[in-house]
Image (cartoon, one colour):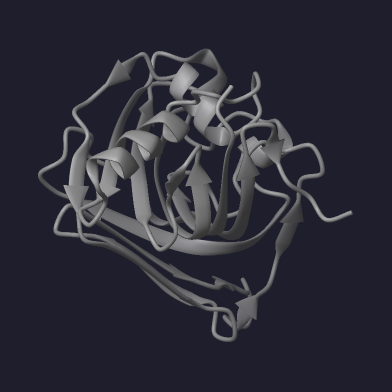
Length: 213
């Protein structure tokens, strides 16, 4: 198994209510699942291929819960990536060289038998932890905007964090309210307005999620 690791930040948005029932092993809010995950790699490698400073994103869509499969996915790779870096990111994002169920990429790829053509774009990710506001831009193809969950009474930011000691996506993430728009992609997200979003620091290897001692 080829050695790899990525350390960086992720912004994800799906069509469930904020908090996402999947995090609590429950069925998705509306019965189906669609999402855009965008991530920035601060430091990373795949074998001898350096991945520092790259971005990538992936669109997913399932007709039911993720664990029932029959989904589709479309990867979007940083346009600045070399051919070797693109191949490395595609390998990581399709679960290659990864222990069984070790990462979200392994699980989501396994549950997505339909894999659309990989695209390239100028991708960026910006998040201000103080305000809870952020944006993930995937060229002209997609954009996710996140903001704090509003308190149901006052409207003030309602701060929620979820810890997943045995999760396959992150160890801890800040919950948020997000919206995503897509265009000119094989997978179009249609239900992601004011829905679940999360922001997480990613520490991931082929052996799964790295957690603090």
